[in-house]
Image (cartoon, rainbow, N blue to C red):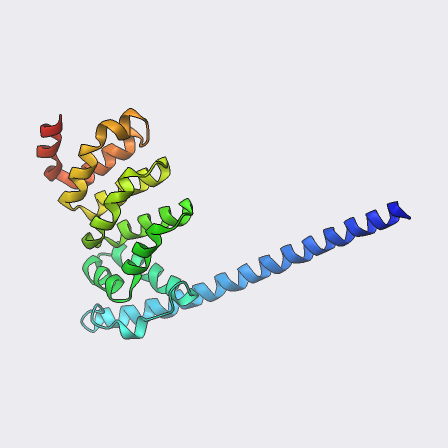
Length: 202
């Protein structure tokens, strides 16, 4: 009798896990389809706005709830527009729609993945005002956080970020907290402006 109950319980657990897995996959597939539809919708709206003279001043039609599918869709479309050369317009819209503030607030998250993602997004948005919020991340103990912060600051290109990185070079490289390739790429992103600081700190 005990064996029968045990086997039955195991079968129920297996069936439950199987159903949960199927439901989760179905839910994710549906979510991805909705996200794709929203990307197309907002891409068309942004393209029309850009064709009519720019979309940086048209923030209201693209206001969405932070963290929602629509929010993610607008973010993806803006990053795509930045890659296509409308960097300044998209950068302003990221600020006006609250994306910059949203990710700056997430820098305080304890979860390393959430923090690293926020740092990376801020770097990709290229809003130089985020530099001051990212500088404390250079003193973090997690190598992943340090690497993504160095990359983000190099994308922002602010002199404060460059000097902060150069000042910490011995520690970052000496303790292997950041790879040499990451550091070389970051310093190259700063361009010729990094040369005086590198010569000064040798």
